[in-house]
Amino acid sequence: YLPTLSGSVSRINDEIRYPDTSIAPATINRNTATAALNWRILDFGGRAANRLAAENLLTAALASHDATLQKTLASVIESYFDAVTARALAVARIQNEEIAGNTLASAKRREEKGAISRSDTLQATTAHARAILEKSRAESAYEKALSVLGNIIGISGATRITIMLPENPDEKAGEKLDALNIWLEDARKKHPAIIAARAQLNAARNKTESADSEGWPSLDFSGNYYQNGRPGQSLTPSKVHETSLGVVLTIPLFEGFSRTYKVQGAQAQAEQKQAELANTEHQVAMEVIKAYADAKAARKNLRASNDLLNAAQDAQSVSQHKYDRRAADILEVLNTQSALADARQERIRCLAEWNSARLRLLASAGLLGRAAVE
Image (cartoon, rainbow, N blue to C red; front, side):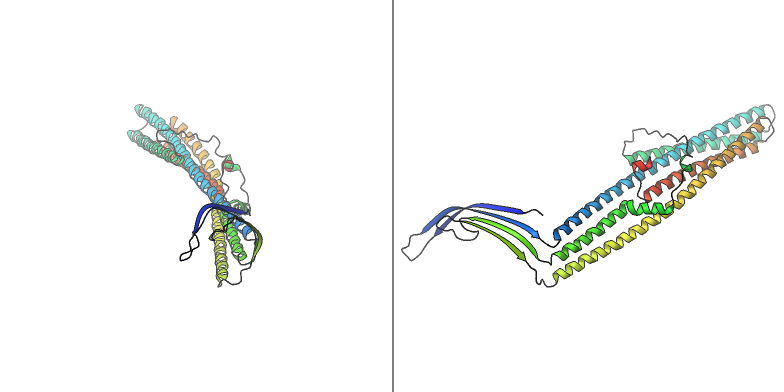
């Protein structure tokens, strides 16, 4: 939209000889200067279309940048949830090992008093050894999860990361999930991939308008100043100053159909971007639908796992109390301990699935940001 201004200054030595005549040579040494001003006044929307195309491409680039940030944030939070899950499993394995250890100590005391056989003590020893092995594996998995988390967030391996388990993991499970159509509408409006594809489509349409406008007339204002002759012309014996002002109307008449082909090519690019936008919207919608179904199922499973854990804890407490009073055998105690260990593992798995499902739902809808995660 702004005018262009250019200028040049030169020193010219012009010598003219007349051979085979008595005319003396003429020598002219002179400084020349040239200045030119050009300003496009009217172009039937070409400049406006190019400006809009540039703005849409910038919007697409910013949306792609946002998508990259969200993808990185999703990787960090997913690794964090993996570490939390590994930490919870390690804590559960430690609790199982303590219970197995108490059962083994009680079995040894009863064996010393002759209340049970050696076989019962050996079974308790086996269960305790298995609990120690599972605790060791859980702690190793937790250390591995911490290493992966540290690598993703870019800290040195010497830095120690500490994971704190949530005090009330069921609070998020009590939240009501919005309807699926609300998530789909949010994804259509806010997902960075869709925003980028839509901006690229608009830019392609603007390019089509720009290509079409080049076939229409254009109006330019021009101003020129020449001192001591125009460029490429010989110098005059006397000093000359020339100024010209004009309005130029350019009307393209025939360009061998090149303009038609250029417009058709731009239209084909716009059609391609339209198809890419439709494909992106379809993929995002499918991801939201799957993530929404997983989130609903995970929330339901989280509540069921809590009931299972409470029942297993009560059963283990009752069987342990009966065993201490010699009203139950070692097999009943070991069975309830095994059931409690399975219930804790299911509880941790359901918590991990719920956290992961909530994360995937936010990411699929394009809403994964610091405020949304908090």
